[in-house]
Image (cartoon, rainbow, N blue to C red):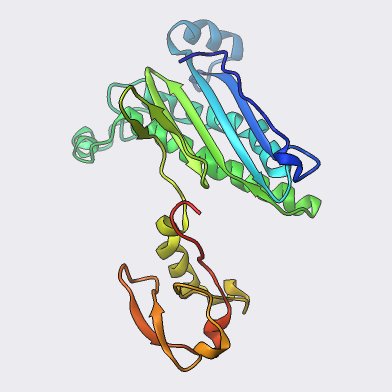
Length: 262
């Protein structure tokens, strides 16, 4: 991987005054903090063997303003570093211990970990997931405090311990270009992949719809002439399609709208 990557930027084709698209690129170094050791003593003991370095690249596509993308580009890598340091004691072991301290409460603890097929890579993945969650909470708090709205996608790549990890939220995608084919490196969040999860949330918490949306999916936006007719629809528990009699409430804007990658 080339470190000095050049990331082109554009100002949203003049759709907004500020750049809603942000990027970040940095080196991430983590080390384990031993309890009971002073900072200088800890550094002398651990820096040669427990100092781990990774490389981080990220892209953020802002929506509704640049604020969320700016916060994410400045803060996500810090979250990742923090979460990796919290589990570095497990990362440096051949197999993650049941207890991060290494204590063995049950003699069969290593066997349970092995049966669950838990590897050190899973700790890195978990750290990335927790970092995304924390960064999302920070963005939400900042938006609420400043009375702003907006959001952004996030696509991050971390080269760590000889492996490449890719994490994403939203519809920004990573691909690996080989000689003869293209390999997707990220899971996409689109109307097709997220439909059932979002519809199920709407079923469990209808107040979230605020009387403005319907959780049902239809091939098109329904009109007044459709009321009383049986039309194609899908609910959260359905992979296939069925027919339902259209009610007035079904004329509301659909909660999930779009197809493919849109």
